[in-house]
Image 1 (cartoon, rainbow, N blue to C red):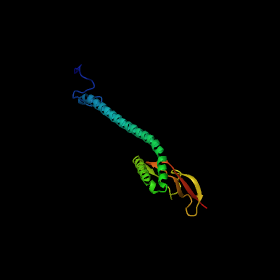
Image 2: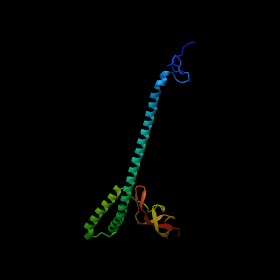
Image 3: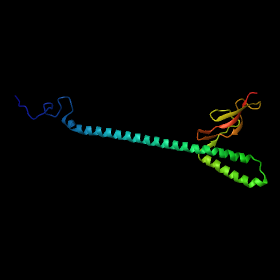
Length: 179
């Protein structure tokens, strides 16, 4: 009878094949490398996910900061609108030779105010002749008319404004109703 090698692994044949159905001995030696590769891949995946989460967080914070800034600017711009209205009323007054220099100064300031509003993304709402839209218009008078169609804005009493796509102030309007 052949003598058994006391130091030999009983699960491994003399040619190096694993008798338990596993890989040969060389593959068993590579298992730590495979484990390290899997760990590296998992850590790399975790790093990419963390970087993406941080990027999303940064974008969200930037968007919130911008919205807060826009909200603060909206209040200031709303406060300027009555001043613009008063300049427009002053410009509707009849011009005389004595008030010509004053009128030119008012026109200059009015133009500067409108430029400032435009730079901040404020645009006037075109209301006259359009259909009444409660999202942009505030009807203060309903008047019968044979000339205008029902629901048409006949007169703009106070100009409305948008800031970007949002309503800053609705236009106060007179709306036609059937006679």
